[in-house]
Amino acid sequence: MDPTKRNYIIDILLGLDFLVVLATGIIQFLSLHDIFGIRSWGLPFNTILTVHVWSGMVLLVLIVAHIAVHWQWVANVTRMMFAKK
Image (tube, helix red, strand yellow):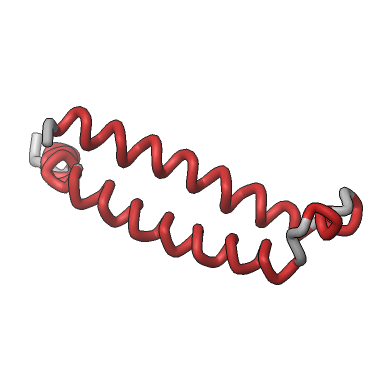
């Protein structure tokens, strides 16, 4: 796969998954499930918690993939930062 396309796909998935983790986290933290009546939408708190946990795990995998794909860049920048001048 073309590296640019691969990076784009990983970054888009990271962004979308982050939004899911953020939204479900805010709903849990602020108890918005009661305020907005999410239970009437067919999403009980346990479902929101499950989506939050699993999307968090997916986010972790995507972050590891992102770092692995850009590892050479990380190594080069670190080497340049600590190089003797």
